[in-house]
Image 1 (cartoon, rainbow, N blue to C red):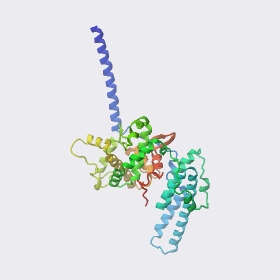
Image 2: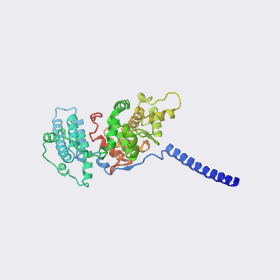
Image 3: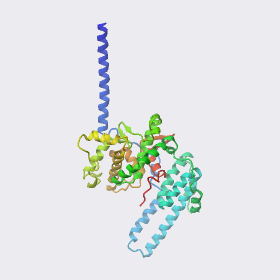
Image 4: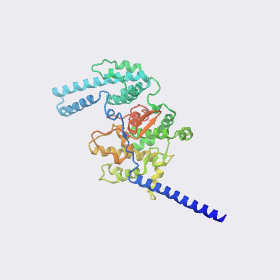
Length: 397
């Protein structure tokens, strides 16, 4: 009996030792993987990457706008000259052409989703921005074309010299309602996310103001993180998040409602202090994330995972975004109105943020009710969906 007990104890000890050794090895590998950015998401390039930076008229209108802008600078000091007058006439003609094409596309969208058409019209009339309307149209257009097997139903709007009565179209969809064309809005998760995000409005506005970014831009990244979390943990959502109407709080490698990784948070803090860094935001923000006396690691973790107060989660996210936007601006590329690029950078992290004239939209894959997204494309789709525009309105120049 004693011999059997000794053998049992011996092999139990051996097996246990090997199991704990294996667990320790995995944990050590995990630590070094995070420490040296091996877990950072490289992501993939979105299939529609090249389309996101364009309006309804594509590269043609962008090229024309650049030419007109250059002419405007040349003629700014001679406002009464014939050249300046000619520029103004051409500029008005281009704006009229874009408005006609935009309202044509809005009418097509209205045939599929009258409510979506009305949201675009509302913001179009409120802000009088042809470019904003064009981007809102593109978000809806991509989804409609996908549902129609990529056969464009917008062909007529891409033609030259079309005739459209914009006031009649606006009246046609006045206060229209319909089911959404965006998959992430068509399920039970969205109602919870929407309610919880609006509940955090004051915290989001405060964090965005401190960092100096548009609140809607921060919300677009928060929304994607939440949609991704809820769609990967449906059972947990049904049992916990939905009944309590709260945001999901990541608690593994990515932390909090913004899904900020610990090493990303540390780098964000360091860039605030380093005046030689391309990410440096200036001395006015150098102490924005300073800690009280004590252990910074435990304080940082508590900040990012606090389920009752998400302020620091938003602040880290806002400063993280602003630092990358500053890096690109310092390199000569303004990303202020490119939520698809900002969302991509938020997802892939500092090591993948490399300023260039042709940035790609992408990031990790997200699937919502069989619709496939990349992180950047979903950030774009939310941003230009018009959803939550009453709480987080668009900001234009």
